[in-house]
Amino acid sequence: MRLTLYTRDDCHLCDQAMEVMAAARVPEYESVWIDGDAALEARYGVRVPVLRNEDSGAELGWPFDAAAVAAFLASPGRG
Image (cartoon, rainbow, N blue to C red; front, side, top):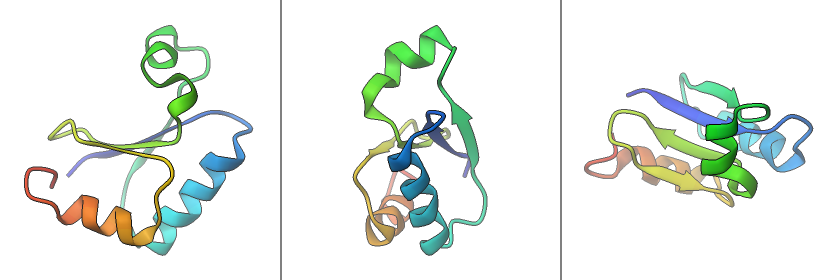
């Protein structure tokens, strides 16, 4: 499963999301900063942080906790 966490620079919610990802023991994911990318800014704007399963296209928007991340990863069609 390919996971991406879309974030912004200097975003305290994004920092919290990374802490949640660590608490959920997500083994591997890519962090992508949307700043300066017009397409990503148009898509995610103020929604960040957003966790996306690149294989299924499913997204989990903030706010989320470790339990929500675990459920997201375990849900049929998302993993």
